[in-house]
Image 1 (cartoon, rainbow, N blue to C red):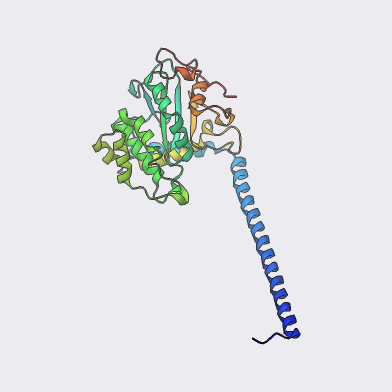
Image 2: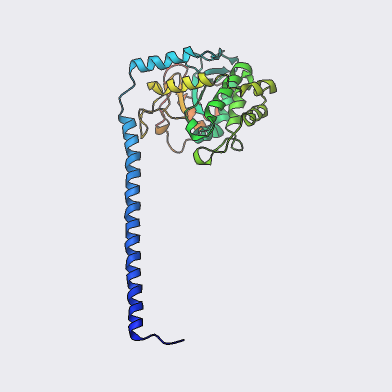
Length: 305
């Protein structure tokens, strides 16, 4: 192989330096583009959060119209209470125990936070219901249809409403089954289509009668669920009172006797079970003990701070 002349070596070196300079310029441009993109994304996120928090309250007319839309739905569940939930006590559906608080739980069945709450506190809440220590209002919502490709939130909520109507004895076990970590579908890009048949099978695992489970996924209450899910976020009693989501409703949302339980203020060392127990004035060690009732019977929950 012939040796390169000095001129050729200098030309090659000059070519390398030119390419290096070009690469550095490209990297700089890419870096600037990335920074600009990140700034824009952050700005957009901030815009939507600030806008949501700063929007004026819904008008009285808009709230009235949303509420009226629920009553106009043809297929409405007879067991729903005046707040569009389902009251469960040791006595059954719509048979509240007197002298104990009512805990309301607003949930979306694809919501990870709802699942985390149910998986950690669900069994203890059922024990409180069975012991006559609380009445429980179950509120199936459908806020997160956009997080699936097939309106999973609406279909799942409609199925649970059907169970509340036709097999209420298995309502609580059905709710727990829908949040089973081996079943609950992931949301957004991780979502995998979950068929009506799969929902029905999960209800059957919870003990729901086969005929009820099969009928539950036919969408009987989909329109009602959607109407309720449009109305509930307009109710100020369901809005966050602190934090980034102040003035908005998210799930899970907890109420005690119709009053907001501010989970944002709960000390981090409290478990979800302890949060519920503390808010109603019950020692967590007494959960399931029918001879010990919460100190809160009516009125507001105890502050969690």
